[in-house]
Image 1 (cartoon, helix red, strand yellow):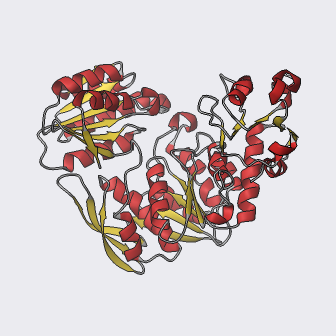
Image 2 (spheres, one colour):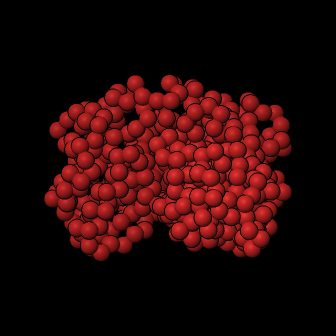
Image 3 (cartoon, rainbow, N blue to C red):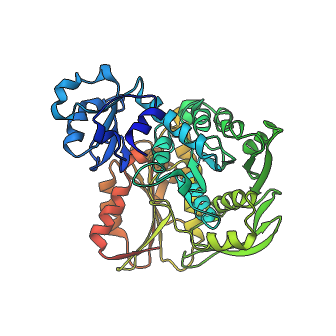
Length: 473
Protein backbone atom coordinates (compact mmCIF):
# COMPACT_ATOMS: atom_id res chain seq x y z
CA UNK A 1 0.00 0.00 0.00
CA UNK A 2 1.32 3.42 -0.95
CA UNK A 3 2.14 5.99 1.70
CA UNK A 4 -0.60 8.34 0.52
CA UNK A 5 -3.19 5.58 1.12
CA UNK A 6 -1.67 4.75 4.50
CA UNK A 7 -1.98 8.42 5.39
CA UNK A 8 -5.65 8.43 4.38
CA UNK A 9 -6.55 5.30 6.35
CA UNK A 10 -4.72 6.52 9.46
CA UNK A 11 -6.29 10.02 9.20
CA UNK A 12 -2.87 11.63 8.85
CA UNK A 13 -2.07 14.96 7.30
CA UNK A 14 1.09 14.59 5.31
CA UNK A 15 4.26 16.34 4.28
CA UNK A 16 5.35 13.90 1.60
CA UNK A 17 6.99 14.74 -1.69
CA UNK A 18 5.16 13.38 -4.74
CA UNK A 19 7.63 10.58 -5.35
CA UNK A 20 7.48 9.41 -1.75
CA UNK A 21 3.68 9.56 -1.58
CA UNK A 22 3.60 6.76 -4.18
CA UNK A 23 6.21 4.66 -2.33
CA UNK A 24 5.18 1.41 -0.61
CA UNK A 25 7.02 0.85 2.70
CA UNK A 26 8.90 -2.38 3.26
CA UNK A 27 7.41 -2.55 6.75
CA UNK A 28 6.43 -0.66 9.90
CA UNK A 29 8.65 -0.31 12.96
CA UNK A 30 8.45 1.36 16.37
CA UNK A 31 12.07 0.55 17.30
CA UNK A 32 14.50 3.23 16.16
CA UNK A 33 17.43 0.90 16.87
CA UNK A 34 16.20 -1.78 14.47
CA UNK A 35 14.83 0.35 11.62
CA UNK A 36 15.65 -0.94 8.14
CA UNK A 37 15.81 0.94 4.83
CA UNK A 38 12.38 1.55 3.37
CA UNK A 39 10.44 1.11 6.62
CA UNK A 40 7.87 3.53 8.03
CA UNK A 41 8.86 4.58 11.55
CA UNK A 42 6.04 5.18 14.03
CA UNK A 43 7.16 7.45 16.86
CA UNK A 44 5.54 6.30 20.09
CA UNK A 45 5.86 8.44 23.24
CA UNK A 46 6.95 5.88 25.85
CA UNK A 47 7.11 6.15 29.63
CA UNK A 48 10.89 6.56 29.58
CA UNK A 49 11.81 7.35 25.98
CA UNK A 50 9.91 9.30 23.34
CA UNK A 51 10.33 7.89 19.84
CA UNK A 52 10.12 11.41 18.42
CA UNK A 53 13.62 12.00 19.77
CA UNK A 54 15.02 9.61 17.17
CA UNK A 55 13.22 10.74 14.00
CA UNK A 56 16.35 12.33 12.53
CA UNK A 57 18.33 9.14 13.26
CA UNK A 58 15.83 6.78 11.62
CA UNK A 59 15.85 8.88 8.46
CA UNK A 60 19.64 8.66 8.41
CA UNK A 61 19.27 4.86 8.67
CA UNK A 62 17.01 4.78 5.62
CA UNK A 63 13.46 5.01 6.97
CA UNK A 64 11.17 6.09 4.13
CA UNK A 65 8.88 8.19 6.34
CA UNK A 66 7.83 8.77 9.94
CA UNK A 67 4.42 8.95 11.59
CA UNK A 68 4.61 11.63 14.27
CA UNK A 69 2.67 13.99 16.52
CA UNK A 70 3.58 17.52 15.42
CA UNK A 71 3.90 19.14 18.85
CA UNK A 72 6.29 16.37 19.98
CA UNK A 73 8.60 16.98 17.04
CA UNK A 74 10.90 19.95 16.39
CA UNK A 75 9.60 22.06 13.54
CA UNK A 76 9.86 20.15 10.29
CA UNK A 77 12.27 22.72 8.86
CA UNK A 78 14.87 21.54 11.38
CA UNK A 79 14.87 18.11 9.72
CA UNK A 80 16.47 19.62 6.62
CA UNK A 81 16.35 17.25 3.67
CA UNK A 82 14.00 14.92 5.58
CA UNK A 83 11.25 17.51 6.19
CA UNK A 84 9.07 16.09 3.40
CA UNK A 85 8.83 12.57 4.87
CA UNK A 86 6.30 13.09 7.66
CA UNK A 87 2.79 11.85 8.44
CA UNK A 88 1.18 13.98 11.16
CA UNK A 89 -1.45 12.46 13.46
CA UNK A 90 -2.97 13.41 16.81
CA UNK A 91 -1.89 10.16 18.49
CA UNK A 92 0.47 7.69 16.82
CA UNK A 93 -0.79 4.59 18.67
CA UNK A 94 -4.42 5.44 17.89
CA UNK A 95 -3.55 6.14 14.25
CA UNK A 96 -1.95 2.70 13.93
CA UNK A 97 -5.02 1.11 15.48
CA UNK A 98 -7.34 2.96 13.11
CA UNK A 99 -5.23 1.90 10.14
CA UNK A 100 -5.33 -1.76 11.22
CA UNK A 101 -9.06 -1.62 11.87
CA UNK A 102 -9.81 -0.16 8.45
CA UNK A 103 -7.56 -2.66 6.66
CA UNK A 104 -9.25 -5.60 8.38
CA UNK A 105 -12.75 -4.21 7.87
CA UNK A 106 -12.16 -3.96 4.12
CA UNK A 107 -10.54 -7.42 4.06
CA UNK A 108 -13.54 -9.06 5.84
CA UNK A 109 -12.03 -12.54 6.16
CA UNK A 110 -11.82 -14.66 9.36
CA UNK A 111 -9.85 -13.47 12.35
CA UNK A 112 -8.98 -15.97 15.09
CA UNK A 113 -8.22 -14.22 18.38
CA UNK A 114 -6.18 -16.00 21.05
CA UNK A 115 -5.81 -15.16 24.72
CA UNK A 116 -5.00 -16.95 27.98
CA UNK A 117 -2.86 -16.59 31.08
CA UNK A 118 -0.34 -19.21 29.97
CA UNK A 119 0.48 -20.79 26.63
CA UNK A 120 -1.31 -18.29 24.39
CA UNK A 121 1.69 -17.82 22.09
CA UNK A 122 1.97 -21.59 21.66
CA UNK A 123 -1.79 -21.82 20.99
CA UNK A 124 -1.47 -19.00 18.46
CA UNK A 125 1.43 -20.66 16.66
CA UNK A 126 -0.24 -24.10 16.64
CA UNK A 127 -3.52 -22.61 15.41
CA UNK A 128 -1.77 -20.77 12.59
CA UNK A 129 0.11 -23.93 11.62
CA UNK A 130 -3.05 -26.05 11.58
CA UNK A 131 -5.05 -23.42 9.67
CA UNK A 132 -2.35 -23.24 7.00
CA UNK A 133 -3.88 -26.47 5.68
CA UNK A 134 -6.94 -24.41 4.71
CA UNK A 135 -5.27 -21.31 3.30
CA UNK A 136 -2.66 -18.58 3.71
CA UNK A 137 -2.37 -17.37 7.33
CA UNK A 138 -1.21 -14.07 8.79
CA UNK A 139 -0.16 -14.56 12.39
CA UNK A 140 1.26 -12.42 15.18
CA UNK A 141 5.05 -12.72 15.32
CA UNK A 142 6.51 -13.49 18.74
CA UNK A 143 4.22 -11.94 21.32
CA UNK A 144 3.11 -8.85 19.40
CA UNK A 145 -0.19 -8.92 21.28
CA UNK A 146 -0.66 -5.33 22.47
CA UNK A 147 -2.49 -2.27 21.21
CA UNK A 148 0.55 -1.44 19.07
CA UNK A 149 1.79 -5.01 18.51
CA UNK A 150 -1.43 -6.12 16.83
CA UNK A 151 -1.42 -3.18 14.35
CA UNK A 152 2.21 -4.00 13.52
CA UNK A 153 1.07 -7.51 12.60
CA UNK A 154 -1.76 -6.21 10.42
CA UNK A 155 0.71 -3.82 8.74
CA UNK A 156 2.42 -6.87 7.23
CA UNK A 157 -0.68 -7.23 5.03
CA UNK A 158 0.01 -3.93 3.28
CA UNK A 159 3.80 -3.61 3.10
CA UNK A 160 6.72 -5.22 1.24
CA UNK A 161 4.50 -6.03 -1.73
CA UNK A 162 1.85 -7.87 0.30
CA UNK A 163 -1.87 -7.28 -0.18
CA UNK A 164 -4.71 -8.18 2.19
CA UNK A 165 -6.12 -10.53 -0.47
CA UNK A 166 -2.94 -12.63 -0.12
CA UNK A 167 -4.24 -13.91 3.24
CA UNK A 168 -7.21 -16.17 3.98
CA UNK A 169 -7.02 -16.12 7.79
CA UNK A 170 -5.47 -13.99 10.51
CA UNK A 171 -4.47 -15.59 13.82
CA UNK A 172 -3.87 -12.79 16.31
CA UNK A 173 -2.63 -13.08 19.88
CA UNK A 174 -4.35 -10.69 22.28
CA UNK A 175 -2.69 -9.97 25.63
CA UNK A 176 -3.60 -7.76 28.55
CA UNK A 177 -2.39 -6.27 31.81
CA UNK A 178 -5.53 -4.23 32.58
CA UNK A 179 -9.26 -4.20 32.01
CA UNK A 180 -10.28 -3.03 28.55
CA UNK A 181 -7.12 -4.09 26.69
CA UNK A 182 -8.61 -7.18 25.07
CA UNK A 183 -11.80 -5.24 24.36
CA UNK A 184 -9.72 -2.65 22.52
CA UNK A 185 -7.98 -5.34 20.49
CA UNK A 186 -11.23 -7.08 19.56
CA UNK A 187 -12.58 -3.68 18.46
CA UNK A 188 -9.61 -3.37 16.10
CA UNK A 189 -9.79 -6.99 14.92
CA UNK A 190 -13.21 -8.53 15.71
CA UNK A 191 -12.69 -12.31 15.93
CA UNK A 192 -14.76 -14.77 13.99
CA UNK A 193 -13.36 -17.33 16.43
CA UNK A 194 -12.11 -16.37 19.89
CA UNK A 195 -9.97 -18.78 21.92
CA UNK A 196 -9.61 -18.51 25.71
CA UNK A 197 -6.87 -20.92 26.79
CA UNK A 198 -6.99 -20.58 30.58
CA UNK A 199 -7.20 -18.23 33.53
CA UNK A 200 -4.12 -18.30 35.76
CA UNK A 201 -2.33 -15.87 38.05
CA UNK A 202 -0.17 -14.12 35.44
CA UNK A 203 -0.54 -10.34 35.92
CA UNK A 204 -2.43 -10.87 39.19
CA UNK A 205 -0.45 -7.90 40.55
CA UNK A 206 -2.64 -5.67 38.36
CA UNK A 207 -5.96 -7.40 39.07
CA UNK A 208 -5.88 -8.75 42.63
CA UNK A 209 -7.66 -12.06 42.02
CA UNK A 210 -8.17 -14.79 39.42
CA UNK A 211 -11.84 -13.86 39.25
CA UNK A 212 -10.89 -10.37 38.08
CA UNK A 213 -8.41 -11.83 35.60
CA UNK A 214 -11.23 -14.03 34.28
CA UNK A 215 -13.41 -10.95 33.90
CA UNK A 216 -10.71 -9.26 31.81
CA UNK A 217 -10.13 -12.39 29.70
CA UNK A 218 -13.88 -12.67 29.05
CA UNK A 219 -13.60 -9.55 26.89
CA UNK A 220 -12.47 -11.98 24.17
CA UNK A 221 -15.84 -13.74 24.21
CA UNK A 222 -17.68 -10.42 24.36
CA UNK A 223 -15.74 -9.22 21.31
CA UNK A 224 -16.52 -12.16 18.99
CA UNK A 225 -18.57 -11.27 15.93
CA UNK A 226 -22.27 -12.24 16.15
CA UNK A 227 -22.61 -15.75 14.73
CA UNK A 228 -18.97 -16.53 15.49
CA UNK A 229 -17.51 -19.20 17.77
CA UNK A 230 -16.02 -19.18 21.26
CA UNK A 231 -13.38 -21.88 21.79
CA UNK A 232 -13.21 -22.52 25.53
CA UNK A 233 -11.12 -24.71 27.85
CA UNK A 234 -13.48 -27.20 29.48
CA UNK A 235 -10.84 -28.08 32.09
CA UNK A 236 -10.89 -24.51 33.47
CA UNK A 237 -14.14 -23.64 35.32
CA UNK A 238 -13.48 -19.91 35.07
CA UNK A 239 -13.17 -20.18 31.31
CA UNK A 240 -16.24 -22.37 30.99
CA UNK A 241 -18.31 -19.79 32.87
CA UNK A 242 -17.74 -17.46 29.92
CA UNK A 243 -20.10 -19.50 27.73
CA UNK A 244 -22.96 -17.78 29.55
CA UNK A 245 -21.93 -14.36 28.24
CA UNK A 246 -23.26 -14.73 24.71
CA UNK A 247 -26.31 -16.41 23.23
CA UNK A 248 -25.48 -15.43 19.65
CA UNK A 249 -22.20 -17.35 19.27
CA UNK A 250 -21.46 -21.06 19.06
CA UNK A 251 -19.25 -22.70 21.69
CA UNK A 252 -16.65 -25.40 21.01
CA UNK A 253 -15.14 -26.88 24.17
CA UNK A 254 -11.73 -28.51 24.37
CA UNK A 255 -10.20 -30.43 27.26
CA UNK A 256 -8.49 -33.51 28.63
CA UNK A 257 -10.23 -34.18 31.93
CA UNK A 258 -13.69 -32.62 31.55
CA UNK A 259 -16.30 -33.59 28.95
CA UNK A 260 -15.65 -31.58 25.79
CA UNK A 261 -16.20 -31.47 22.03
CA UNK A 262 -12.50 -31.84 21.20
CA UNK A 263 -10.46 -34.09 23.51
CA UNK A 264 -7.27 -36.12 23.77
CA UNK A 265 -6.99 -39.73 24.92
CA UNK A 266 -4.17 -42.26 25.27
CA UNK A 267 -1.60 -39.53 25.99
CA UNK A 268 1.95 -40.91 26.03
CA UNK A 269 5.23 -38.95 26.13
CA UNK A 270 8.13 -40.29 24.10
CA UNK A 271 11.03 -41.34 26.31
CA UNK A 272 13.43 -39.15 24.35
CA UNK A 273 11.13 -36.07 24.54
CA UNK A 274 10.75 -35.94 20.76
CA UNK A 275 6.95 -36.06 20.88
CA UNK A 276 3.82 -36.37 22.94
CA UNK A 277 1.48 -38.88 21.33
CA UNK A 278 -2.28 -38.90 21.73
CA UNK A 279 -5.55 -39.69 19.98
CA UNK A 280 -7.40 -36.58 18.87
CA UNK A 281 -11.16 -36.92 19.27
CA UNK A 282 -13.50 -34.50 17.46
CA UNK A 283 -17.21 -34.62 16.64
CA UNK A 284 -16.18 -35.60 13.10
CA UNK A 285 -13.82 -38.44 13.98
CA UNK A 286 -10.52 -39.50 15.50
CA UNK A 287 -6.87 -39.38 14.43
CA UNK A 288 -3.49 -40.13 16.00
CA UNK A 289 -1.17 -37.19 16.71
CA UNK A 290 2.57 -37.20 17.32
CA UNK A 291 2.92 -33.67 18.71
CA UNK A 292 6.58 -32.52 18.65
CA UNK A 293 6.10 -30.61 21.91
CA UNK A 294 6.70 -31.70 25.48
CA UNK A 295 4.07 -32.24 28.12
CA UNK A 296 0.39 -32.52 28.87
CA UNK A 297 -0.01 -28.73 28.92
CA UNK A 298 1.04 -28.61 25.28
CA UNK A 299 -1.52 -31.30 24.45
CA UNK A 300 -4.13 -28.91 25.86
CA UNK A 301 -2.67 -26.08 23.74
CA UNK A 302 -2.91 -28.36 20.69
CA UNK A 303 -6.54 -29.13 21.49
CA UNK A 304 -7.32 -25.41 21.50
CA UNK A 305 -5.88 -25.14 18.00
CA UNK A 306 -7.75 -28.28 16.95
CA UNK A 307 -11.05 -26.90 18.25
CA UNK A 308 -10.58 -23.69 16.28
CA UNK A 309 -9.74 -25.63 13.13
CA UNK A 310 -12.74 -27.91 13.66
CA UNK A 311 -14.99 -24.84 13.74
CA UNK A 312 -13.78 -24.06 10.20
CA UNK A 313 -14.54 -27.56 8.97
CA UNK A 314 -11.09 -29.19 9.02
CA UNK A 315 -11.24 -32.95 9.56
CA UNK A 316 -9.59 -34.80 12.44
CA UNK A 317 -7.02 -36.29 10.05
CA UNK A 318 -6.15 -32.88 8.57
CA UNK A 319 -5.72 -31.39 12.04
CA UNK A 320 -3.64 -34.34 13.26
CA UNK A 321 -1.34 -34.16 10.25
CA UNK A 322 -0.69 -30.48 10.86
CA UNK A 323 -0.15 -30.86 14.61
CA UNK A 324 2.36 -33.64 13.95
CA UNK A 325 4.54 -31.29 11.90
CA UNK A 326 4.44 -28.35 14.33
CA UNK A 327 7.54 -26.90 16.00
CA UNK A 328 8.00 -25.36 19.45
CA UNK A 329 7.72 -21.58 19.56
CA UNK A 330 11.00 -19.76 20.14
CA UNK A 331 12.23 -20.19 23.76
CA UNK A 332 8.98 -21.98 24.64
CA UNK A 333 9.90 -25.60 25.16
CA UNK A 334 12.63 -25.93 22.55
CA UNK A 335 14.71 -29.06 23.07
CA UNK A 336 18.47 -28.57 22.75
CA UNK A 337 20.79 -31.60 22.68
CA UNK A 338 24.41 -30.63 23.24
CA UNK A 339 27.27 -32.67 21.87
CA UNK A 340 28.53 -33.37 25.40
CA UNK A 341 25.37 -35.35 26.21
CA UNK A 342 23.51 -32.67 28.19
CA UNK A 343 19.91 -32.04 27.09
CA UNK A 344 18.25 -28.67 27.78
CA UNK A 345 14.61 -27.61 27.57
CA UNK A 346 14.66 -23.92 26.68
CA UNK A 347 11.43 -22.52 28.14
CA UNK A 348 13.05 -19.22 29.05
CA UNK A 349 10.64 -16.82 27.38
CA UNK A 350 8.27 -16.36 30.30
CA UNK A 351 7.01 -17.95 33.50
CA UNK A 352 4.16 -18.10 35.97
CA UNK A 353 3.31 -20.67 38.66
CA UNK A 354 1.09 -22.90 36.54
CA UNK A 355 3.45 -22.83 33.56
CA UNK A 356 6.48 -23.58 35.75
CA UNK A 357 4.87 -26.59 37.42
CA UNK A 358 3.59 -27.94 34.10
CA UNK A 359 7.07 -27.68 32.58
CA UNK A 360 8.69 -29.39 35.58
CA UNK A 361 6.07 -32.14 35.50
CA UNK A 362 6.76 -32.73 31.82
CA UNK A 363 10.50 -33.11 32.40
CA UNK A 364 9.98 -35.53 35.29
CA UNK A 365 7.91 -37.80 33.04
CA UNK A 366 10.80 -38.14 30.59
CA UNK A 367 12.73 -41.41 30.88
CA UNK A 368 16.36 -42.27 30.31
CA UNK A 369 17.99 -39.25 31.93
CA UNK A 370 20.58 -39.41 34.70
CA UNK A 371 19.51 -36.31 36.64
CA UNK A 372 16.98 -33.52 36.30
CA UNK A 373 18.03 -29.92 36.98
CA UNK A 374 15.57 -27.00 37.07
CA UNK A 375 16.72 -23.41 36.64
CA UNK A 376 13.75 -21.26 37.69
CA UNK A 377 13.79 -17.48 37.49
CA UNK A 378 11.68 -15.19 39.64
CA UNK A 379 8.06 -15.01 38.44
CA UNK A 380 7.03 -11.38 38.03
CA UNK A 381 3.75 -9.43 38.31
CA UNK A 382 2.33 -11.63 41.08
CA UNK A 383 1.75 -8.73 43.49
CA UNK A 384 1.17 -9.38 47.20
CA UNK A 385 0.76 -13.10 46.54
CA UNK A 386 4.20 -13.37 44.95
CA UNK A 387 6.17 -14.73 47.92
CA UNK A 388 3.52 -17.32 48.80
CA UNK A 389 3.13 -18.46 45.20
CA UNK A 390 6.89 -18.95 44.93
CA UNK A 391 6.89 -20.98 48.15
CA UNK A 392 4.04 -23.16 46.91
CA UNK A 393 5.92 -23.87 43.67
CA UNK A 394 9.11 -24.67 45.59
CA UNK A 395 7.30 -27.21 47.77
CA UNK A 396 5.64 -28.88 44.78
CA UNK A 397 8.88 -29.06 42.80
CA UNK A 398 10.66 -30.63 45.78
CA UNK A 399 7.97 -33.33 45.83
CA UNK A 400 8.60 -34.18 42.16
CA UNK A 401 11.42 -36.27 40.76
CA UNK A 402 13.86 -33.33 40.54
CA UNK A 403 17.49 -33.64 41.63
CA UNK A 404 18.47 -29.97 41.65
CA UNK A 405 16.66 -26.62 41.73
CA UNK A 406 18.47 -23.35 41.00
CA UNK A 407 16.51 -20.18 41.75
CA UNK A 408 17.41 -16.94 40.00
CA UNK A 409 16.82 -13.45 41.41
CA UNK A 410 14.36 -11.82 43.77
CA UNK A 411 11.45 -13.91 44.98
CA UNK A 412 13.05 -17.07 43.61
CA UNK A 413 14.71 -17.03 47.03
CA UNK A 414 11.32 -18.13 48.43
CA UNK A 415 11.18 -20.91 45.86
CA UNK A 416 14.56 -22.15 47.03
CA UNK A 417 13.68 -21.89 50.72
CA UNK A 418 10.58 -24.04 50.25
CA UNK A 419 12.48 -26.67 48.26
CA UNK A 420 15.10 -26.91 51.00
CA UNK A 421 17.89 -29.43 50.45
CA UNK A 422 17.88 -29.63 46.64
CA UNK A 423 17.95 -25.90 45.93
CA UNK A 424 20.41 -23.00 45.63
CA UNK A 425 19.68 -19.32 45.03
CA UNK A 426 21.60 -16.90 42.80
CA UNK A 427 20.95 -13.24 42.16
CA UNK A 428 21.88 -13.34 38.46
CA UNK A 429 21.39 -15.71 35.51
CA UNK A 430 25.14 -15.58 34.88
CA UNK A 431 25.83 -17.09 38.31
CA UNK A 432 23.17 -19.74 37.71
CA UNK A 433 24.77 -20.58 34.35
CA UNK A 434 28.17 -21.06 36.01
CA UNK A 435 26.65 -23.61 38.38
CA UNK A 436 24.89 -25.52 35.61
CA UNK A 437 28.10 -25.62 33.57
CA UNK A 438 30.00 -26.95 36.58
CA UNK A 439 27.41 -29.52 37.63
CA UNK A 440 25.74 -30.78 34.43
CA UNK A 441 27.09 -34.03 33.04
CA UNK A 442 26.25 -36.31 30.11
CA UNK A 443 22.79 -37.77 30.53
CA UNK A 444 21.41 -34.80 32.52
CA UNK A 445 18.21 -32.99 31.58
CA UNK A 446 18.07 -29.25 32.35
CA UNK A 447 14.94 -27.10 32.28
CA UNK A 448 15.44 -23.31 32.03
CA UNK A 449 12.30 -21.31 32.88
CA UNK A 450 11.90 -17.64 33.78
CA UNK A 451 10.03 -14.37 33.37
CA UNK A 452 11.25 -11.93 30.71
CA UNK A 453 12.67 -9.42 33.18
CA UNK A 454 14.94 -12.04 34.76
CA UNK A 455 16.66 -12.80 31.43
CA UNK A 456 17.09 -16.53 32.02
CA UNK A 457 17.81 -16.85 28.30
CA UNK A 458 21.32 -15.78 29.31
CA UNK A 459 21.69 -19.22 30.87
CA UNK A 460 20.95 -20.76 27.47
CA UNK A 461 23.43 -18.41 25.78
CA UNK A 462 26.16 -19.40 28.24
CA UNK A 463 25.43 -23.11 27.81
CA UNK A 464 25.64 -22.79 24.04
CA UNK A 465 28.98 -21.01 24.34
CA UNK A 466 30.36 -23.56 26.81
CA UNK A 467 28.95 -26.86 25.53
CA UNK A 468 29.54 -26.20 21.85
CA UNK A 469 27.55 -27.66 18.97
CA UNK A 470 23.97 -28.66 19.54
CA UNK A 471 20.88 -29.86 17.76
CA UNK A 472 17.49 -28.22 18.37
CA UNK A 473 14.20 -30.12 18.07
